[in-house]
Length: 495
Image (cartoon, rainbow, N blue to C red):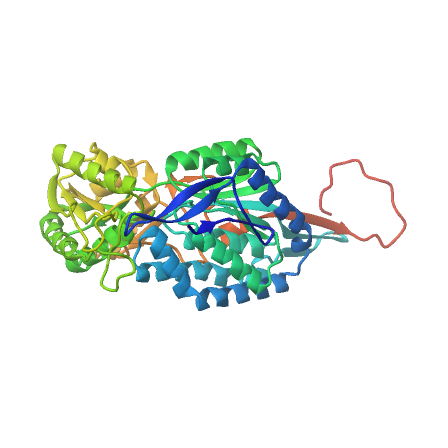
């Protein structure tokens, strides 16, 4: 049995606890992953702390050059990473490649770190006095990342942190851990010193050990809202910076003046891509007025046509969900939605795949007539279930979106610029798409939601990522040119 070990100070480190890693397409165990103890976490943090002093003094130019080398390796090994993602997560290869590419864009952003860390300078703020500011790294940073994007989400974090001069400990999901070790190998090949990037695999034991460790200065997290709340509360109580991105219930509002065929195609891809296991997946459609019936008809046709199969198969458009528990959860929500009064427009729960009788496959489900009190709407299902709610006006749609406790992403489909502008100003959501179903910002912006979708003050990657992984120093400087005068005990003011 293949074993996936920790990577600490450039060395593979074995564990004392192990967990199985499944292939979702077959249901078979394909590897074992080490589950870190508190001692393993301490070893990784200690290695990062030891490496920090030298790495923070490494010039910005050298850090940038290393990021260029790392970026090239990500491109070179794109297919290798995509295959590993598909084998352990289940998503189809094209989707996995897209994940690698979007993560690589953050590395490209980090290649410009000398510009991103430029400070400010003000000459002669007072007579003979100058003022300037600059940013410094915070120290050892930790990333706790989810199964659904095992390459992309960590790449939102560690390239920016490392380029800023920090060292990093990554705790990836134990469900699809292999790619994180490959990323560590790429960093080493790019020339990153041992200890700057470390990987500890594990469960809650590892998470809490990172949150409690006194030498961890900052923690970045992406996952469910209950865990995000726990990470934020425990990490901040220990005096750390914490950015914790939680769950989502992303809506797509469709107005009658939208191109309904285009909207249906885009919403279908956004709802069922990666088997719905995306934090930016569209899981709720809000059909306004006369758009409802023709939109549902088109959504049904597209959902019925999706080809479900193993992620490695060329003809597959949607792979399995990640675990048997995930499959059972999806089946349960669909059944309860029907019992609560929703109409099962498309029901592919009994999808079978030839040659894969034990895979975790569940086909697309489309429910119409859903109301806001049904748990198929209130809960984050994280599977291939799309629900349709009906309202009479744009104002009602905005109220519905704003009443939801999540505020991660939202989309509006319309042909009206005036309606789009009203919508983007009125919704209490962090990321908005206008005729774009998955409005993930480019790397030079920042990713993050509002309300129960984010705990902490800063979004991840982009400019806010640079701010999160650094802290500012402001310097006021005077160089006397004559004899020292008598000290003035008044509070200093400009003169």
